[in-house]
Amino acid sequence: SSGVETKEFQTEIRQLLDIVINSLYTDKEIFLRELISNAADAMEKVRYLQLTGADVKDGDLPLEITLTADEETHTLTVADPGIGMNREELVENLGTIAHSGSKEFIKRLAEGTQDFKLIGQFGVGFYSAFMVADKVELYTRSYRPEAEGCLWSSDGSGSYTVEDTPDLVRGTKIILHLKEDARDFAKEETLKRIVKQYSGFVPYPVLLNGQKVNTVQALWTKNKNEITDEEYNEFYKYIANAYDEPLFRLHFSSDAPISLQSLLFVPKENFEHWGFGRLDPGVNLYCKKVLIQEQSKDILPEWMRFVKGVIDSEELPLNISRETMQDSALVQKINKAVTGRFLKFLDEQAKSEPEKYKEFYDKFGVFIKEGAANDFGHRNELVKLMRFESMKTEAGKFISLSDYVQNMAEEQKAVYYVNGPSREVIEAGPYLEIFRSKGLDVIYTREAIEDYVLSLMGEFEGKKLISADQAELDLDLPGQEEKTEGEESLSEEALNALTAWLKEALGSKVTEVRVSKRLADSPAIVLSPYGTYSMQRMMQLVNRDL
Ligand code: ADP
Ligand code: MG
Image (cartoon, protein in one colour):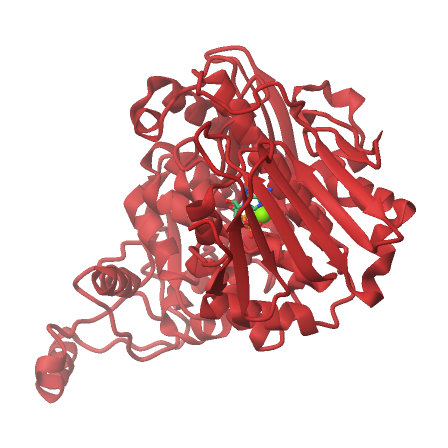
């Protein structure tokens, strides 16, 4: 199969290219970031292969990205000595889409969202080249000694060609034939600015017509006080493929029980909220600046998937495999150390910058709750990070369980909570009456998962956690038996007659009708003998998911 072969793009890619080519999107310059990041990924893989002793073609090539801009021919060439691709890989990687997330992204673009700049986050960054080029030629040769070189070429309209091409060196060279309105991208000043802006932290030299234009740094290995906020933010944008500034950052190192350096960021936006599906983990694992595992699934608990960043430990073996990752004691140690540190950090932030913490919790609280429900090992810390409105807070203001406990009267034994879809609905219901009349605060939970977590906990700082809609509510406080002035009580006989009549009238809709001491204004209240209403809702949720 050495001749020229013409192949159709997969439907979704055709759709995507159609949008890319006709887009009026103004930040077309992001295409360069995507190509440079692919080049860096490909070289990172070479570095890893060499370190683990694989046989790599052209082993002496310096690992650097070369940009060649030519204003006369209106071309821009991006070349890297990375792992390259053989013919099958080429067709697989630049012709089909593997991620379901990318399909969702393309659907959204087709519906008219302008979130183009996110293209790199959805595994289709390469195609952004067609924003600026009306023809793309890609020469590539795999690192495998026996592989053949190949040329991939397309004008982005439905199909592409591949053909064998002899005498290539290892890696990939992409020639962009710039569209008339994109000829600026063959200008040195323009390119220099773009590389600095978007790719300043690529861990390999980027040469533009022979001159180096980026700063090569593994920022996490540097000393905190030698790093500026701008450098941190640029680094975040680079590793997270992001365009926003991070909400939080945590840079720390530890020596015991394991030696590691870590730089973690919380983004400004929660993309799971946007309906893009479940986030992939965002932390990469390094050993002495060599990438061991990208978006590592095993290094941090699942609920931490919103965190972006780097963990570098010199104690990790370079050739650790996916399987050994899962049950490696070393990985467990790293997990424990980093998660613990991150939880402590959040707790500190909540205290020192409550407003900002609230912003964090509004967006990322779902992950905290998920962790509190699933991550047994960190449940206590996570529950402390949860926030609630309560009867005594203003609408939209938060307290923690610790706040609640601190403000409890001395004789109050338990922490009370009640579930409802909104503050208004909760406050209109009869459950709060007794608490209001006793001056006791009640925490408002909104989601079933919050009740689920509180019932799993059972108690907090030595106080029982009790749902206010529980049938057997014993408030046991002084004043309970007091009668309001003017109140008349019915005789026991009359009460018995009334409850018997009600039971008969309601029939099998209720299991029991009895006299309540908890009501102040409402004549009656419905309670569940089978645990709380929200627990039942939670069980329904769980069963539906199965
Ligand atoms: P992503 O980088 O998120 O996987 P892209 O659309 O940018 O998505 O690239 C698709 C795939 O094409 C990459 O995963 C990689 O396998 C391959 N690829 C792209 N550029 C290069 C390159 N310079 N060298 C080797 N492989 C590349
Ligand atoms: Mg990419």
